[in-house]
Length: 353
Image 1 (tube, rainbow, N blue to C red):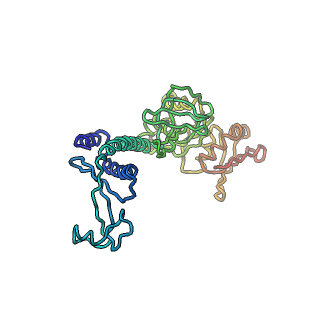
Image 2 (tube, rainbow, N blue to C red; image 1 turned 120 degrees about the vertical axis):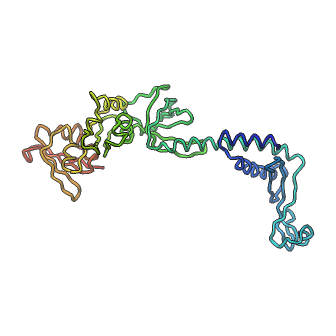
């Protein structure tokens, strides 16, 4: 250890943001282990690196006792008082035991400790960077496949798109860029583990925030989303300004805004409806594109009895019940659809999750 080493630590602190004192404390701890390993010592020792000169010293720490049973760990009160009369029982005395060749061992350990701490610090920086992006959209390059998972290269990190978070109509080609929603960021010994999704409702929400300025600035608010990824979604929107058409803002001129989202979702159909604080109105709108004649609510059990024209029944229910199912998820009401005249049509019930 020398002055140049300390100057190198100063430089690291400026460039990498790793505090010099943290490195020195880690090195001192590593040198304690190195001393015990190289000198077969069972002593209680302390290593001190001089913060000005870089000089390394090793001190054996012994407890002052009345009667010595283990001379490696204890020193008698009588001997202690010969050195300094102020010592009392259970005080700690230190004796310098620095071996002559310890400087070489210190230099070897210094490199290992510094490299390890740099890696840990960089992992920590990358973790903090991505932890702040949970719930956001990131763009990565498709790198490779592991079993059914897709690995995305984010530059300084790697994201995992699990099979359960992949859209059924997505095609993944190595080297292509792909947008995904950050589900979770976990700290691991190998760096941050970033889990992403393309099926999460939040992905749809974030895509519209990117495409629709009125959503981004808060003029239009997305109230709820029901999504069956890759097939169909329903999104309820509301405008804080009564002069703004929330549905029109999301659709955009000639449908350009919604089409951009549909393209990113590989053709997933998106129904955009106007949210209402009146449940009957909201439920009727949620069953779009079907025309609704009336809605009767049963608060107990949160069941909505919906009446539709007979020729609109299959449209209201949707293929395999999808339209009614999404409407139930969107509104939070169980929906029971009947055709007019009463009893003439089928009955279809779809439960909210």
